[in-house]
Length: 342
Image 1: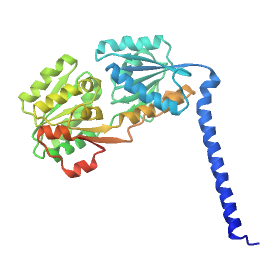
Image 2 (image 1 turned 180 degrees about the vertical axis):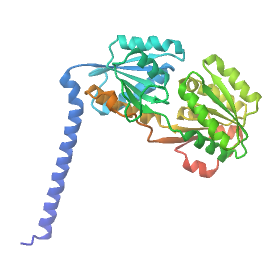
Image 3 (image 1 turned 90 degrees about the horizontal axis):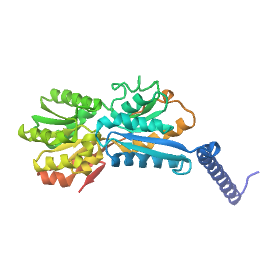
């Protein structure tokens, strides 16, 4: 029997409403299951935050992790709490701070950078450690491999071997006749050493001379930056790590004062006045770290969770700084930027 059009339309509408109902119920079930786990256990979990850098950096990590965990049904003060420890770039404090978190009986330790998870791993081989943004976890001995971490450490890596070459390409778009570059890097950080080596390799293929500016503590910056000016570097590349990024404003101001175009791997460098930043989106990594914390609190083993690499990179250009340096940014480069600061 052939149904009239009005009847067909009504039945179609009912089917759509049924599908919508099914989807809504499925979504509600997922949301309930995410939040129900902690309620069923009745436990308040402790999340340790550890960084070699400043308190502000640790707060940034905590905020990103908190937001990610909230989406998964966790609520600070209700079923989890945070314990933060910040070395403020006094690296000799890291072992004691890691020991403090272990002594507090935290359920997971979340870290920024490479030095913090190294200290955490030395302090405990049983408490799970989630790296929110480690530089070189394999080369640093934190994990056996990215796919099979082994032990109690997993998380997310900043490692992207081709970024050094890409940063040089970006600068050559603005300054085609680069002959000498300076690299400011933390010699106490294995990841920074890797960035320096990769930059040096990329520069060699372009026949660009490289000047190494090593720092290990805040007191080293003035001498290192003065050396860059004295040697008349064409550009400055800043290897991103807690020490250099804590001094991003100082570095950016020096670069502008000495008409030295500067680039680094994190957005906060461009925000602080650096000319360009190109690298992983840290906010994305922090939020993704929450998913690993969630899995671990529900019983997953760090050794079974592969270390993941960035999936999103962001290019930020500071036009205000470009103007101060007397530089014109090509329109093609501006078109590629994720953000332009004016």
